[in-house]
Image 1 (tube, helix red, strand yellow):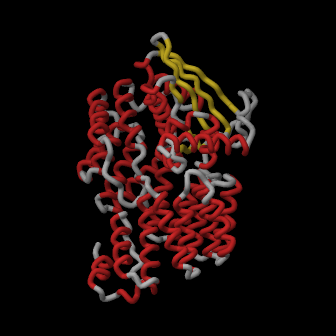
Image 2 (tube, rainbow, N blue to C red):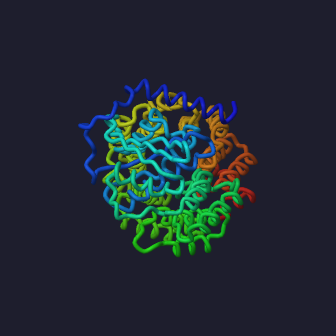
Image 3 (cartoon, rainbow, N blue to C red):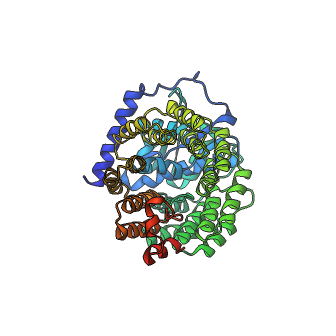
Length: 495
């Protein structure tokens, strides 16, 4: 099946799930209850557009609104990168979220309380944007606004929507007033947003369209040299190319007095991490979160840092920082449960994962987490049944096969483990699944060791390292007999 066909199938599945799980969103109701301002977790998805060549318009408008909401520092917000991560698990693109039947389930899975989406239409030389705000829990439309102007007025139009829909202060300026700069930056980010930036991403593959993306950011900065979003994209692009010094310098120098730019903090942190400066990466995120406690992406990345460092007590506390601002965030609940599982608090971990599933029933990622907690609690039969339920999701989730392979290793069913893990690799093809592939190769090495296949074990360990794995399972009992052999020792000792 082609990727476009896969995307169409995924959209169809999402529509069916949304329809089966709940009634259609209710019509606008002036008495509809809104979330108190300080408790809002806002998700602004790219607006739908009336022509393929105008996709950037809906993406740019959503980014301007999100940026203004972040500057206002009242509630919390979900970034377009977090939205992209959720969509990619469904083989969808950011612009696929503009449909309400897709957006509402996604908003729930991302822990949002309030959703903003809309439609941008060009007619007779004018740009007309109609946008709505929804309460995610009740599915009620709480506000609806329309603005009209020219393409050149897009930044101002988006700012008006931020004020009318999210009560953003009219004193705050949009991240740029130059429509040309906004268009170029949006076109660059539409390609760049799919690249994994989180601490636990593993190795990132070579960039596609690197020159074209760079050209978009250069054009944006020619139109507006102070445009932080374009500088952040340019810095991330440099870091992906290995130019981490210039990347950090650009991210730091582009900070503007009086304007909080979330993406520059992410760019600085990412470049520092790529340079091996864990302290610099951590510091950039902490400073951003201190400035804006509602910056959920920074809070999540800080928690992932703790998970990567295997500081699970610190990770549980870090996930609590996310949950303090977004208590109905299923992913954060599931990740805190994972940290508790590593701390052998199995009962609490299971309860927390089930709480996450109560918020987002049937979510495949949460089912995988529940099965993992069951494995920790030695509930193997229940774990296998739960993983097989997760395997029914479309598109397939390679983590389900990975965890089932691990369960078979624990049960000494090595051939079953091998076959299941190989199947996992066939599904883990995306750029942001390097870490998953690395874990599969590590488990395959353990299986090869148990079966006495030295050459295969070494090859699998080498492949795990090529995917960014930093800690290989060289000390496990299944590989003990290979200690002292040249190739094995070389791959295990190499940094």
